[in-house]
Image 1 (cartoon, helix red, strand yellow):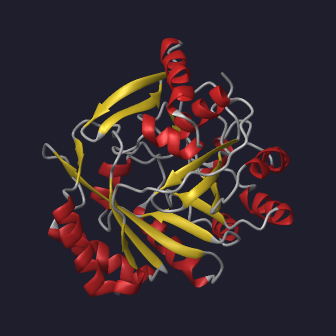
Image 2: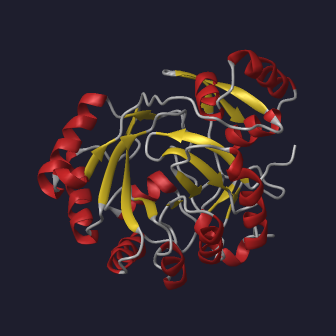
Length: 326
């Protein structure tokens, strides 16, 4: 089953109803990225990319514009058009041109969700500055913890990321939101929710000076079974500390349980739409119903068919059963 560049919309805790753009093609690999994060909802990386030059057959601007033209008008009340997907989107250096061209055909705000790995590059920062919103990940101010959580490709250094985020903020282009994904573990694996880690994060965030800081924990089954969500009480404690040190007006605690009224989506191939959604974002049955605005009776045979064809698999988590691509 061939996946499409445009997918969703996704109903997210951060962006509301967002139409996704995946600008890195899978090729022969199920998943490729320049990080192999222990908390990744899509599982392990099959092929780790170090540089944009290693991206095989990148999605072109024309492909994106064609996809947007034929898709986004079928969806009402979108909050964002978002560059995200199965791989780090900034590995495609055409993103800046894609954003410029999307603005010619749509007035919907544009977001780029990035793991921050390439923000040390001037060309990547220039591309990101053209968006309305950049959601950039920062999990630690300590190199060892950063490397343990992200398991980055060769050549990616935390200090380059920190300096790059600071420079991006100075450009006064896109609004910069730093996503702090807090993690716990059920063994002694290095994570970032200790008091010492939180203090270092605060120090680095003061240096970067972003517009917004999102504090959250993993809500979907992670790549590693030893990674677990930070308890809500601890999450609130850390958010309170961030409030005190960084300013309540820009700190946002993101919790589970987003609900939203149903939208109006004109479907053409519901099986493909369900698969494309799960490919980029593992979902529960109910999350698929809400995101794609379909009835449970419609979804049941589609899920059964995709599971039977071994396109997706069930993952049992504490907060429900998720469907993830095989």
